[in-house]
Amino acid sequence: MAFIECKNAAFGYEGKAAVDQLNFKVEEGNYLCIVGENGSGKSTLMKGILGLISPMEGELILSDGLKKNEIGYLPQQSEVQKNFPASVYEVVISGRLNRLGGRIFFGKKDKRAALEKMEMMGILDLKNQSYQELSGGQRQRVLLARALCATQKVLLLDEPVTGLDPATTREMYRCIRELNKKHGIAVIMISHDIDMAVQEATHILQLAETQVFFGTTQEYERSKVGKVWMGGEDDD
Image 1 (cartoon, helix red, strand yellow):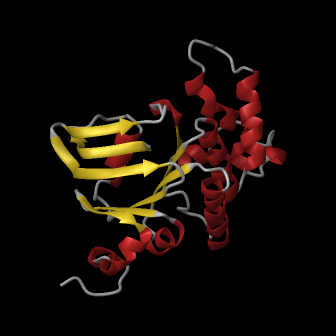
Image 2: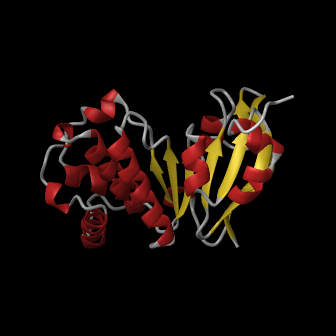
Image 3: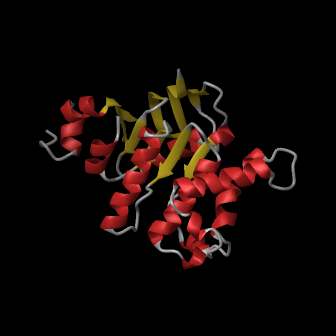
């Protein structure tokens, strides 16, 4: 069963669709990369998946017990995030806020989850360090641990390697790969790096204000649109 499925869906604002004709699904163990040029609808679709906007047409269905607040989200890094005045532990455990329900304080289960996710990401030794003092790669690991605190099933990553140096980029992709393959977490990643997307992902969704392609990575590499986007042949 699919965790997330779009059926003839369109998303947009003020009655105007930014992306439409969406028909795709994300199942357990999938690693989906969403690619396309700026303005192609990637960010709008991301907001739809997170439940921040509703479909203008069609459906977006969450199945297998998945709830909107159980999708782990890693946003693009921003200057505001870099200067966030909190400890690593405080940032990570904030990923449990949607699980509090009517509670005011974090409980033992929340605290245990935060420590487990920090250990999983290899940052437990940074627990009490100021988030502001971390390197770019360390900050992304902290935010990834935070996202993991919100989910056991699906991670949504928005350009997770933007601004990172090549070595740190490779390490971040390794972490994401391990979460997907070793821990069975489905990954949805927005990316401009088509070469890495093809290397890492099991499925590709390409947008251009509409759905241009959805299928396995192998199908994408053989397709006309895939060959054009990867620079294999001219678009004639």
